[in-house]
Length: 290
Image 1 (cartoon, one colour):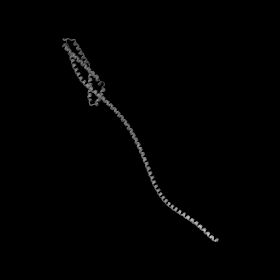
Image 2: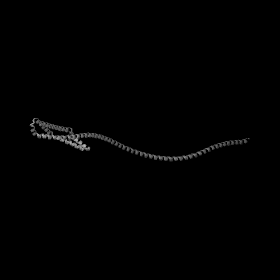
Image 3: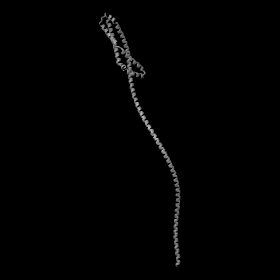
Image 4: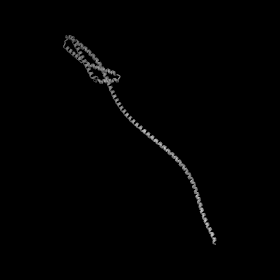
């Protein structure tokens, strides 16, 4: 009976020790692996806030983050002193049992029954807490896995946002360049309009000058036509006068030729008359001499 009770207490001590170690390991795990929600709580909450605004499942993430905070608060609130006291009490009980014989065990058990009952109750409580912590640990592990996945997604989204920001900056630069080109084109268009207006004014002036020159040329051509007609009329008159003059000239030349012929005949007649006169005189002088 004494051997059986000693074994039972040893098993109880081992269970309590295992529970204490499990709780310590759980506390160390939460403080090391899930330290980011406390040490970087501000950044994590900001990230959760951004996720809450940009995702449809943000409320679940917020609830999970509250669960993590509650679990960490519970773990932080757990004191190691009761566990140390229970472990010390268990070690003391084991030490007391080692010095007892079989006849002293009932009295010792009666005296320490309250401590044994408290240790058993504490064992049951620690087992329940351990199961609860296991459940919360599994849920927190899933939550951490989800948060890591969301963190990777957020990192990818941040990369996409960075690339979109770079693309936006590039588009802004291109827009600024297009605006500058538009302003330059508008300036050139205004200059072209002014040049076109100047060219239109010059063309209008040249058209007016051309019209004036054309009118002057038309007047000159009219004057030339009138002068030409007058000259043609004068020429026709001169031609008529010349024709009459030529006719008169031909008549005069013909008359002059006839006059020359008559003059020659007259001269010949004069010579003949003079010769006849001399012959007559000689004839008259001949009878008187005889």
